[in-house]
Image (cartoon, rainbow, N blue to C red):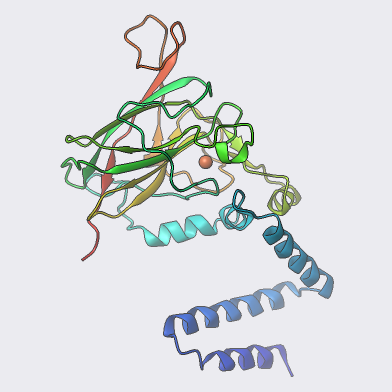
Length: 291
Ligand SMILES: [Fe+2]
């Protein structure tokens, strides 16, 4: 039996798959996987190393840590899926805000917080006042839209990564007012390395790559009748904007934090007296849900 015979036999066996989409996906997967193994001439030892790598990726994953998402992110697959799902015009005027990766640190059921409230449940970094509006693609305000936000602290960690942190620190769910506006107090996010102590981190090191992501906050914006946008706001001052370990930067999502010295004007509630703070404005546009 030749290699081509073997590939052909597997593909033929898959022809009985009743679900046409599953048949299409599995056929392409086997074709590419066999092609890859043949192209590199994968040895038995290398095949076993790959099995061990995938096994370790599963074994280190928990409710709090998703190593397979990290693997997908660092191989650029998460962003490829994102790019294919999104219209090419996204981010331009008159079109929806661009999406980007969800990342491995999203936790459902963040606490609902009031307009203007702080998401920091303990001192977590330099205060940052986030404001903006949620509109449709024509600029009409969307009242009652939901913003689910999460970000890291100045120790570079998300609450979910840090057993010493209050579990809801730096996360919260907000609703827009009648004019589509939202506001909340967070902190200025920091650059951070993705978890590098597992199989994905070892793969990055073996391939000469750094694990750093440019500072950002995460936001999922949703409203009934509109398409949900899972996205980031990136800090324009980050040194990693051009080398994000997970390839997730889109230029329309980069914003500049404006610094305010103490005494330079009224500070938002929650900013400790005498401390500098930052402000950032970012509007979100949602496209109509199909149908
Ligand atoms: Fe993140």
